[in-house]
Image (cartoon, rainbow, N blue to C red; front, side, top):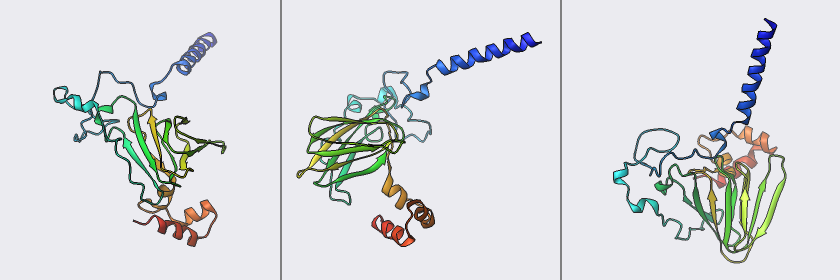
Length: 223
């Protein structure tokens, strides 16, 4: 009996080792496609992790091209910046391809506020202007650098980061993600403009300030 248990224990150890050494698909941002393309059918009411494919007979060349990043974004807003999204919702041809791109325009002094992308690593290149790019690690270490045209950066997946125009002219970056729909959790609006609202006592405790300060901040994000 003891030898039989030992055999089972050895077998379990081998299985566990194999499982630990086996690469799981969930380690990548988006699953690999199993066909040439799957242009998203955004009108479908089917719910799944991604979008169902448009019938191949209805696919045209136009499905694989997107000019949405051509136009400059309107930076006349609170933060003085404007992202233009090139994800699967705007460009259905990206469906199942595991990639997307954004354009972000900045007025002088404009800020792309602290945010994170829960489903993707971000890389980007400065096209115009001078930008301070920074992110904070889970160890609370702040990494940053001022970048100019042609310089590139990377933001590890899920980490809080920002870009700010520190030049005297307009600025522009183009960013890329290893997900067709990276998502964005924008810290200020997530905390102070959620629906329904995060209770004041929670935010007061979190930021160690009085409720009057919380109410003042919330008023800045009121619709």
